[in-house]
Each structure stands twice: as structure tokens, then as C-alpha cells.
Image (cartoon, rainbow, N blue to C red; front, side, top):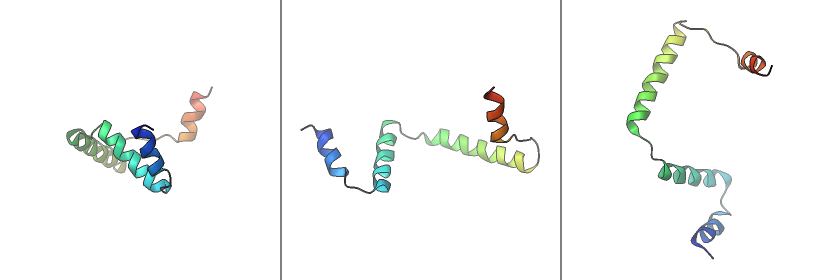
Amino acid sequence: MSVVEEIFLEVSPLKSHDKLQLVEKILTSLNPVDKNIEAIWGDEVEARLDAYDKGMFSTVSAKDVFEKYQK
């Protein structure tokens, strides 16, 4: 039996929530979070939210977007 199979058998009985946490940790280990990029995106989110709150741009409903592109 491979190491992967052994680990799978060990984690199989875990609750879904615990499995999801494990998957997140494995994915993060494969693609580590770049704190600099996260900080830049955090600033961007704040700027967009501020602009939205000030009415600096309009929004379109998801329904309208999907209708437009389903044609």
C-alpha cells in the first residue's frame, strides 16, 4: 500500500469540515500565500468598496449579466 493510500484510509473517517481544512492546508503547501499580493488585493478591495459606497460606479445584477451572455 502506498503512503498516499495509507493517509487516505486514515483521514477517510474524518468529518467533512475536518477534511476540508486538511485539503486547504495541502493546497496552501503547494501554492503558498504571498503576503505582499494578499496585502495589495486587500487594499484593492477596500478601494473598490469605498468607491461603491460613494456611488462612483454602478452595478449590474447577476441575472442581467447571465441573460446578456446566454444569447
